[in-house]
Length: 246
Ligand SMILES: [Zn+2]
Image (cartoon, rainbow, N blue to C red; front, side, top):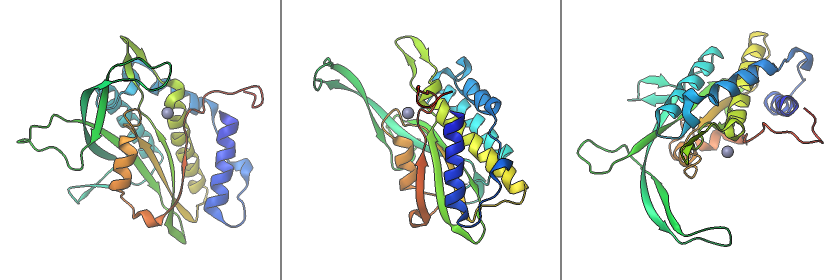
C-alpha cells in the first residue's frame, strides 16, 4: 500500500507542479499514519459505515477532523454563507422484486436506491435517508483555477447477514490514502512547496448503493465542472500480490 501511495504522490507532484520537481526525499509517507486511519475506519464503532447510518456519520466526522488537521479549506456552502466540509444528500430505498440475471443469481427481493434532487420537506410523504460527501481543498498557486480531484468512497456495507462488514480494504484503504496524501501535501506546503494547480480531496458515501454520493457531487459541484481537469479515484488498495511486495 505504501509503494502504491508513493507512486501516486509522484504522479500528483508531476501533474500539480509542471515545473522543477521538489526534492522527493522530503516527502515522507508514514506507514503508521495509513494504518491508524484504516484501523479507525474499520473499527467496530463505525459499524461498517453503511450510508444513512450513525456509523457512516461518525466516519464522516473522522474524515472532516483529518481534513481540518491538514489545513484544507471547506468548499461546500450551507445556506450560501458558512463553509462546510460536508455535502449532505438524500435518497430513498425501496424493496423490489429481483428475478436474477445470469448464473449464480437467485430470484428474491433487493433494495433499490434513488437519489433525490432536493431535500425532502417536512410536509412531504417521502421517507428519505441521508448520506454525506466530505471534501477539502488545497489551493494552488498561479494555476489555482485548474483543479485535480483526488477521491475515494468511505462508505461500506454495514451489517450483512447479522454481522458487521468492516470494509478495511473496500474502502478504508482508499480513504486512508486520500487522508494521508492530503496531510503530505499540507506538510509540503509548510515547507514552501506548493502545487500550481489546486487539489480537491473528496470522500464519497453512497457508493455501495450505486454511486449516489458521487452522482450528487457532479450534479452539485462546489467548483464548476469545466475547472476540474481530472480525477484520480482510489478503491481497494489494501492488498498486495507477489509482484508488488509488501
Ligand atoms: Zn469500493
